[in-house]
Length: 400
Length: 134
Image 1 (cartoon, chains in turn yellow, red):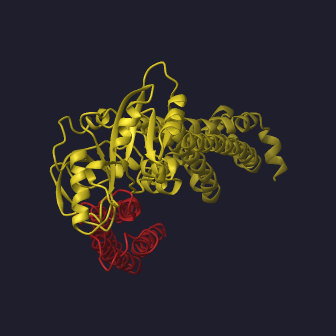
Image 2 (cartoon, chains in turn purple, brown):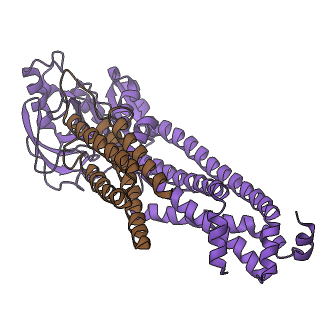
Image 3 (spheres, rainbow over the protein chains, first blue to last red):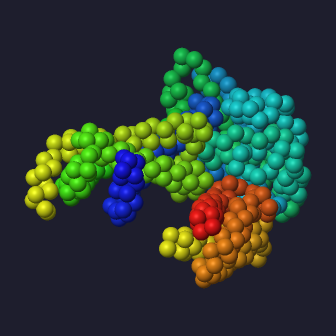
């Protein structure tokens, strides 16, 4: 009888035992692979958000509930708008240490044409902008004309198609790469387009502004601080010097999310280690018990001509096969859950989540496969060693 | 025995697709008395799910192995088609964050793919068995 046949019989002949071992391997590989992918996706999300904000300070009207509301817009895509007087930009330019500044305009669409859902519209000044354009160029290199928009990756609108906002036909000229943040559900347009949309909203009886003219308001100001100036000091100068506004340091806005993220990543890493260690210990115990249970079976195999080395190889190969199949299944299940449902996970976690590309994910899958596949033979190595030293005659004589 | 277990698995997964499509992974609901595009995708999936469940049940009941294989080929083809209903054949809502895109579409794709994989295994097992009996 070949070693392959004995191996097949030992796995299929004891389905419950094989399934239990397989289950441990599935859990282990799912924890190692899934944990690593989730952890790196969260890190990618926060990195992309940091890159895209591109400013040192963001100034908002005090009425905008400080940074919380903007954080919701940026991280979770919760639509919102707030306005302050346009003159504030001139006051900010006079603050010592301000290098560049650019105003942005927020607006929330009425229910977009296809679905009853509101979309965040972000307008920026084409001439002064330094925070949106650098990454907007990935999708569109030209200058955004009147009623031309660039859409976030989460919107189904295709390039060249139009989207009707407040009755105004806006043409999508570009589509952005995924960031895993609330910015993916937003529409970007020039300031003239947003002002036109505010007017269109008012003509439809939707009051966005209280009394002001759309040309006299802005929503936020993005500031780049001059080299050599302390960002915290400039932030404090704005908060002390200008009434009715709240200056927020971009980094501090992200810090809260980054802190939450580091706690989650730490927990995930701890979970991976704990599951891996626990599974390895369980396997070690299971294989030790199994060898004791299968002593007679191995003694019979010895009696029919199997060498000690061949018996040990069979134990190692058996654990290798089960661990490999379990790891493949675990990684497969995890891939089928984490990647297609990444938006749902992001929504539930309230954190930016940007899944790694296929090549990186394949790297993690290979690492998890190797880690789990090696664990089985390592856990069964001691049992294989003991097996190679069994006294066949004594076991067969004892009968039980 | 093995093919009966596979048949029961087919029936259970088809039932999960049918019930799930209007319960735990349903598309976006009615809003202001208006149904969105994804509602029709959901209806199409439910209808296909009912047909799949019925075929899977008939497949369990029929004793003839060749008819079982034939029915499994039908279930396989239909479950592969269901994968393309949300988003490709019938449009879904505008934003990825909406229930139809974040939950309904991936769930339908995963469950249909699982069903397709099971039925493919069943079809292969059917052909192997037929070859052996010949």
